Each structure stands twice: as C-alpha cells, then as structure tokens.
Amino acid sequence: MPEVVIVIPTFNPSQLLLNTLQDICDYEALASIKKIVVNDGSIYGIEYIEIAKKKFLVEIIEHSVNKGKGAGIKTAVAYIEKLLPDIDYIITMDSDHQHLGKDVIALLDSINKHGTGLHIGARKLAKDKTPLRSFIGNLFSRKFFYSLYRIELQDTQSGLRAYPKSFFSALLRLRSHRFEFEMEAIIVALLKKIQIYETPIETVYINKNRSSHFRPLVDSFKVIWVIIRMKILK
Image (cartoon, rainbow, N blue to C red; front, side, top):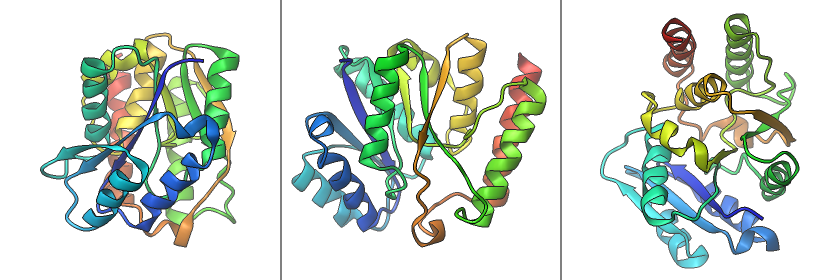
C-alpha cells in the first residue's frame, strides 16, 4: 500500500468542510491517513478550521492572504517534499463535500490496480444533475482540450486527484495558481508521458454548488487560456 497524504485546500469554509472530514474519517482505510488542510487566507469560517484541527487532528497550513486553489496545493506539495519524504501520493479533494470517502477509496483502488500515474476521480456530469454553469464550463473545456490535444477525458476539472511523487517537482513549477492549475497539471502530465487514469466517482452538488468560489467567466477564460498557452509552448 503506498504512503498517502490527503490535502484539502479551503477558502472561507463552512460546515461542509467538517462534513467532508467526517465522511472520509468514517472509513477505516482512510481514518489513519494524514490529512492537511490549507487555509487559503480565509476571512470567514475560521471556526470550522479550528474545529477540524481539534476534532479530526488535521494539520493546518496557513496562507496569510488568498492565493488560489492551485497555490494552496503547491504549498502543501512543498511542505510534504520537505518534511514527509516517504509519501508516495498526494490526494487532493475539495472542502465542500463534493468528494466522498467512498470515492477516495476508489482512487486508492485505482492506484493499486494501475500503479504510478495521475489518477483522477471523474464525475459523469449529467445535464439534469449538474448546475448549468458547471455543466457548460466542464463540457466546453473538455471539448476544447480534445480539439487541441486529441485526448478525451471525462472530467478535466475534477479536484479529486492522486498525484504521484514523481510529479511533485513538476507541480511546483506550474505557472497557474487558481482553478486553472488542474488543467495545467493534466497537460504537463501528458507532456511528461505520465499515464492518466480516470476513475468514476459520484457527482455531488450541494445547494447547486453555491459554496464554490469558481467564477464562471473569469476562471473559465483562464482554463481555456492555459490550454492554448501550453499548446503554443509545447
């Protein structure tokens, strides 16, 4: 069994952060895994981070100001590289309970089945179950990505991922700092010939994803620009 750390970046969290931690801790296979919450300069919801630290014994890494989801992941990667050198995989997940404990288990099963690679929890984004902005944004980015790279992926925006140790240094060199980070990670993995494995996971949107900090226009443009920029630089 590979050594794994779960990393959860969060900004202005709610009760959903605690629900996420409770869900994964309810699984015996996940309860003993080290968990790191990156507080990305939160102004609100600090109390939930404090409860998470005391109740679930998670380690907290602090950003003094909001830097973005990608920056939070990179901060955790740098910390793990320096202080936890025996870690084989970093599993990232969102803090709004979109990702379930059973789906983290599914990602671990994928690692055990396929071996080293970038493992992505892929949602089946049905139009009737997905908020319109999420459905359109993901559909367009997938199609645009395929048009330039001829690689068809089910879910290019999923935050539930397992990054292998061999990819840590590449993650730290990514230029992206916010939601576009995850698209850039996929493209760099392809360029480095790192195998990508998609594992089906449940599609969960609570309150029509109102807790998300994703800005449909600005962040979608940034995702598309990453796809174009990386193709030009290839």
